Length: 427
Image 1 (cartoon, helix red, strand yellow):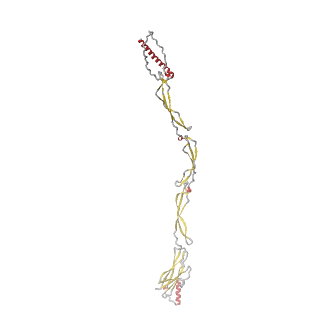
Image 2 (cartoon, rainbow, N blue to C red):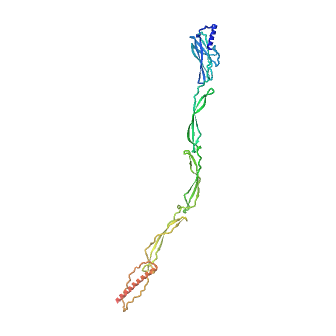
Image 3 (cartoon, helix red, strand yellow):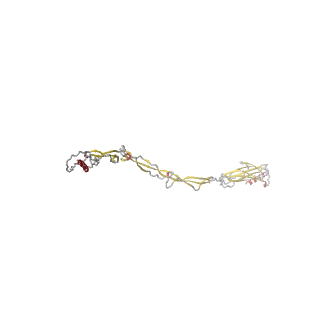
């Protein structure tokens, strides 16, 4: 169409006598072409070029152009409504410009050019071109897929059997979210997940503590130290007591078990018992009693009897100690503890009852002789007799008296006999 229009124009001018026909090989040509690219923004960019050929040497072309739409409006015959592109000296291909059209377009818009020449060359060229078919599927550059990681923590699960701890599983899950073409735009598609990566830890959890055991109860018992009854009487009162207590369990987060807490005591209940014997409550013992018994032995006549008797005095010490009577709760003196008797030397005193008995001895008559008065001679005294100290034994002493009497009688008789004999001699 472009070339036909140029030939028709030349013929018309020749017919009118304005120009002289030149050989066909020297006719000016202007081919308008287009090319399209799909841009990253999802729109086509149409580039329009004009190739000038067979331009006489030394001539400069002035080119004007415009972009129409998808409907062909005819090869231009003038530069009305066009924009001057510029000039081109001689042959060559020039880029007229570009036009950005939606990526859904199925054909390029038509472009139109009108070229004139200088140097008195009245030859003009009307050119049209473009309108190449398009797929209508020009999309923006697909954005890179988005990647990310979801994180979460599952609900705690109590350890079985319950021990106050729970397992908590936290997880991560990587995902990729690619852009998809939808409604002529790139929009994010669904996330594509990888497998979850789980991490399980054990933590303390009060909700996993087992039921608290029942409190432990009990009772302590005891007795206070005995308290002496006043005044002291060897007895004491003893107060016994009871004290109830409660011991509750508490949870130990370190050992994960219940432990018994301290005992919580109630008030003591005291009971005073009956008095009991208590050595430490016995009053001070009374002093030890002591004394001396005195006496004398029964008197005994000296043997042989000489009118005296002998006896001895004696002393005998004694002590008496008190002992505590647990039944009567009092000090009671026990029996006297008596020592040995201590005797004095023998004591002699007169006692008429100890006089020797009088024994009458019948005289022994000598042969009858004429009486001669004898000279009087002093009597010969009997040798002294040491009286024997004999114990007085009662009835047994009679024999002693008899013996003593006989002895005295014999001595007396001997003295008389001697005196008489001496007298006889004298006579």
